[in-house]
Image (cartoon, rainbow, N blue to C red; front, side):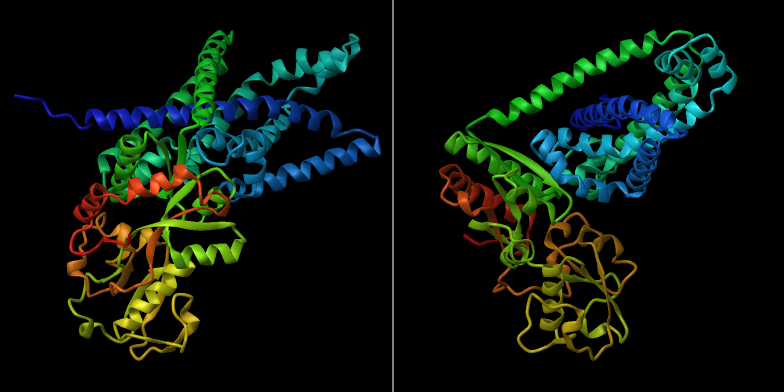
Length: 490
C-alpha cells in the first residue's frame, strides 16, 4: 500500500525553491546591513561628543536621517526606493531587486543598535587604553568592538529575523520567497498545504537564526560563523550570476501578470505556445498589486503585461503619464454579484452592505453592475469612472464599502453582497451561474496585452500575441472559467 505524504514532490520543490530565495535575499541584506551598520554605528559613536561644531552637526543630521528611515514602514520604503533600486541593480522586480530595500531598511536599524552596544562598553577600559597610548583606531578595534561582541551578535540576530519577516513582502515586486509562496500560491490558491509548508519553513528559519545567534554569543571563536558566511556568500554569488545571465537571452521577452490559480495556468500555456510556435522564450513575472505591472512595463523592466482591461490602462496612462498602448486582446472576464445570504436581487434588504473593489476602474465597473442590476442609478454620462460620489439615486440605501479586490471573496460572509473580480471567483469556490447578477457580455472591459508605445511593432511581441490568441489557450480558459466566465476577445 502506497504511503501518503503531507506534501507532494511538486510542493516540496516549491517550498525548497522559495526557502532558498528567502535565504538568498535575507543573507545578502543582512551582510550589507551588518557591515554598513557597524561602520555607521562607529561613526555615530565617535562623533557624538565632539566639540567641533561641524562634526557635531554631522552627527545630529545623520542621526535624524537614520531615525526618519527607521520610521518609514517597509512597504512604503520599498516603493520609495524604486529609483535607487533600478540604479543599483538595473531593475525593480525579482529577488535581486528585493535585496536593496531590505538592506536599506535594516542598515539604519543595525547602525543604531551598534551605537548603543558601543556605549555599553565600560568607560574605564577605554580610559585605560588611552593611558597606554592607544590610538582611536586601536580603541575601536581592540577595545570597543571586542567588548561589545555579544551585543553586536544579538543585534545581528534580531536584524536577520526582522528581515525574514520583511522578505515576505518581496512577492509584491515579483521577488518570490516564502512570503510569495504562502500568500499567493498558498492562501490565494486555496492550497493550505503550501501555506502550512511556507509558515513552517519561516518558523524553522527564525529558530535556526536565533539558536545560532545564541551559540555565537557563548562561543570563544567565530570559526563556524565565517564558514557558514563563506558558503552562503558563494551560493549567493552564484545566484546573482544566474539572475544576471538570465537577462542576456536575446530571444526572450519578460511578461508580467497578476497571479491567481487559473491565470497562472493560462500564462504558462501561453509561454509554452510561444516556445513551440516561434521558439520564443517567455519569462513570466507575477505581481500581487494592480499598480506595479504598468510601472514596470513603462520603466522597461517588462516587455509586456497581461492583466488589465482597456479603461484601467487608459486611466493609468492619464494618471501617471505612461507611454503605453496595447497590441492585442485576450478575454473578457465578466464580474459577478454574489451573496451568501440572498438568492435573488429582489431579496436584498434596505441598508444592505455591498463590497466593491477599491481600485478606481474596477470600482466604477462594480458601480455600473449595481446600476445594471437596478440597485442604484449613476449620474448621467458617468460610466467606468464612477465613484460612490457619482451615485444619483440609492433607493435601498445600500452601504457601499471599498475593499481590495482579492479580499472581497473572503469577506462575503461579512457583507450582504460582493462584486467579485473574475480572477477570484474560482478560488472562492464560486461560479457565475450562481451569481445574483453577471456583467453584460457587451461590456467594454476586455483584457489586453499591453506594451510600451515604442515597442508596439516589435516582432517578438507580435509573436507572443499570436501565441496567446490560439485555440489551445482559448480552450483552457473556457475550462478554467466555465459558464461564460471567459469570453475570447480576439
